[in-house]
Amino acid sequence: MNSVNNEATHTNLKSSEEATKGKSSRNNERRGLIKPGYEYNPVVKYLGFSLLLSYHYVLWFNPESFYPIPLLDEKITIGWLVNLLGTSLAMVVVALVLKRSNHLSSIKMLDKVVPLVLIAITLVLESIAPSLGNPVLLYGSSMIAGAFEGLMLILWGESLVRSNAKFSVIHIGATFGCTLFACMVLGLIMPNFATPIFSVILVAISGVLLVMQSGALENDYVTLLPKKAAKPAMETVAVVCMIGFVTSIACYYLTAIIPWENMPTQIFSFTIGVFAAAVMILLVCVICSFTKEKASIFKIFPYYLVLVIACLATFILSEDLYLVSFLGALCISSLLEVSLIMYFGILMQRGFFSPAMAFTLSVASARLGIFVGNGLALGFEFNPELAQVATDPTALAFVCLLAFLLIPITKRENSILELTSAPVKPAEIEVICQEVSQEFALSEREAEILKLLAKGNTANGIANKLVISPHTVNTHIRHIYDKVGIHKRSELLEYINMRKDDSLNE
Image (cartoon, rainbow, N blue to C red; front, side, top):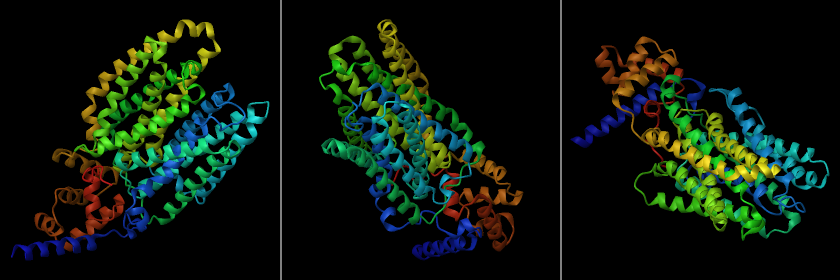
């Protein structure tokens, strides 16, 4: 008898969803509907994005990238800083221009044009610009390459959110770690003349995968939460961004201020550091895969600060520990950037941010920090007298600053985790429904029905409570779906719960 009742209930729920499916063009497609190769293979889903991230490391950390000019030449270092600035500024500008509702990928052919331009400018940057006596072309091409890399990162972010990516550490971390390690190995074993071609190949493959994945998607973007519902999280987000920014400054001040001549690894120090970073990312993935808590990766945010403090302390303590300090700082910076991408990727999927804003906050906060930290160290190199008296005090100042920042991030540790994993409380559902009603201009009756839907009532149950016909209820529900941009009941419940029911599952 129970099985019969359950079957009947299931049938009623199904018919209710079919009866209330919205009429808008957005609702003609089922969210998450993609071709099987991308839906069931997380490695393929993240491979193109990982190749683009690896491109940056291969370009700027391979000793032969600008052959015959040494990687640590002053012009190359300045070019890298310009590149970081170009990426960050381009992403910030695009995110501000697009605002909440617009998307970069809506511009036709842009997913094809951006990779092609990045390929062309990378060839100029590596093959033509270094051979000229005037560094203007080098700096200009670095800025343009950085800007188009930023655009491509945003395009990938939009593609990933449409493919329903969950940004779990096990999948994106493992894919990026393996990809980075393999790319650095291939970059090192290639002959000098082939290194620029290899960088271009990485962009080309990433671009092809971007076009393929975008073409395979048949679903819409995540509907953003009402501004009022997302606003309480902004203070926590600001703390995370500040931690990413300041930690990146400290890490790259340390890596740049340590004389590479004083380390046993010499000019290969940065390359070895990238290998160590890839291994550390994979190690964290292994550790997280054995932990019960899926959000455990974000619990280590405070430990980033502690580890950087330790690296700064060893730098001040002894020259014999320079290599330990250097490798530690470089590894932490790389792991932090990936952690920020995962964190804001999850918030993006839950409707807190648009893809452009989410990837801007994650990538730009880290890369602007790298720009400032390396730029500060470079300024000391240009002023040896100042460096002699200010190098250690600056490192000590970073120790004090990072120790101070441990206070706000420790206080907000629960908030940081709750944004990604904690279920919405019953009292919050009432508030969110009210804010959704205001944001999307729902009628009084629609707002009333929305609250009942959020509490798990079926269409028939709502009809009985409000003393109206089920047909009238279904009509109101269709109007709610159309106004909010939701496709069906299950997605509406996910939306109101800020999509915390699926946590970090891939």
